[in-house]
Length: 208
Image (cartoon, rainbow, N blue to C red; front, side, top):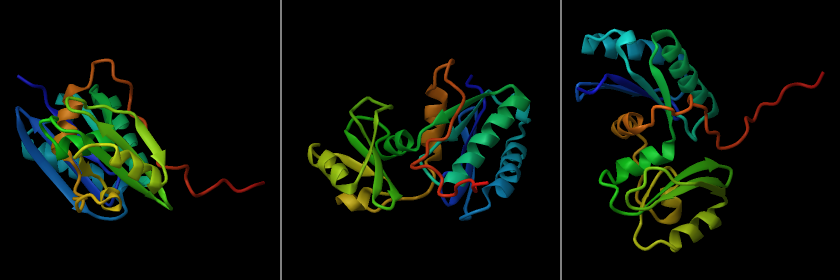
């Protein structure tokens, strides 16, 4: 019997979470823009109550580590690590691009180009060959991403930057089912989650 696990996603305007208990997925989410820190804990508590589960019964806590918004990503990772510390569960980080690739092609039998629009002309992307759930991330201008896309025969394109390289419209809803699958697949010695930032924060410490 599979052990219960929780996944959370706060890297974009959505605050979302899912609880997998014995193969049944309990989901909650809302497109809130900002304020993830205030919404996330009550959302998770509500899911646990709905499933009749106590937090210490969780085996793993998966968190979307980005790239995404600076503040939202930090909130999710900090929450996952803190809850894992208090419950004894293992916290696992799952990148946004692998999760989007798995959602776009659940059978992993086609090449997927997952691309994130980091704004200001910057993009991050990964190419997932059939059977792969992890791939190197590239970073660069739109022209570089277009060159990568042109070199692939009939890829599935997904992510917030998909339309910029003639891909289909992107569904911004969090890929919760994919996060659950990748969290469950993570090795037992997976390192603690750490944010993946598209760029350094805009704010800088004031000079004394």
